[in-house]
Length: 257
Image (cartoon, rainbow, N blue to C red; front, side, top):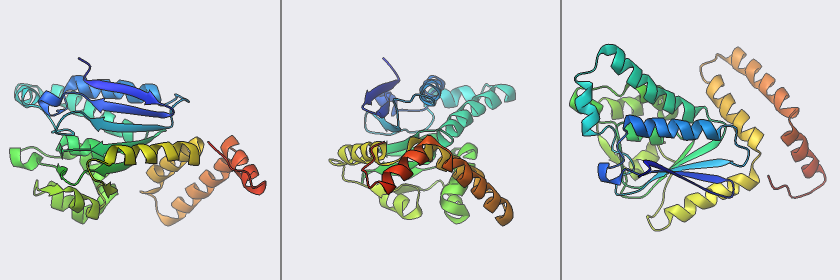
């Protein structure tokens, strides 16, 4: 049985976590499979948006029991390599050239919550739960911390990471952890519609460049940020997508990307 399923409809690829019997826990094999798919999709011009979802009652319950037991016997070097493997997946998603949307149905906990958090857009059902529960088992939510501080700020990050509290979908939306709460019977159609509209209404070059800009500009001071923004702006004007877009606008033509 494939632990991650891949399907494509038009320009939208859907990756589905498929370990329902394990609540889609993040095994080494699942992390590696996700990395393989995301790497392969980086330069695939037939793909514009990637949707990440899961089969079963949980989106992803973090690490599974077998993995946690193994940690006890690992050397520091083995645990470092394993940690870097997950970090590579999160970084790959965060810096990916395509727009990535997570669709959360059920619990997204610990590493599973991190997986949803690093996506560009996230949608969840009203009964979905979110939490970084590592401190409750003597662990730390280290890898997600960088991304979470950028996404929801220090106050919310501390509230989640230091307490291990599990929150509902509406609280997650209020914090900015997810974008929207959607009824369970409507979420698939809603997220698919968003993905399809993004495919035809936005420039692929602009999406990739804007994601890169957001990533690079945040740690800079004002002067350096304005210089980088100006450079990115000037570079974007030379792209074929910008030339097409301006021409269509001036000619009052409807442009489909």
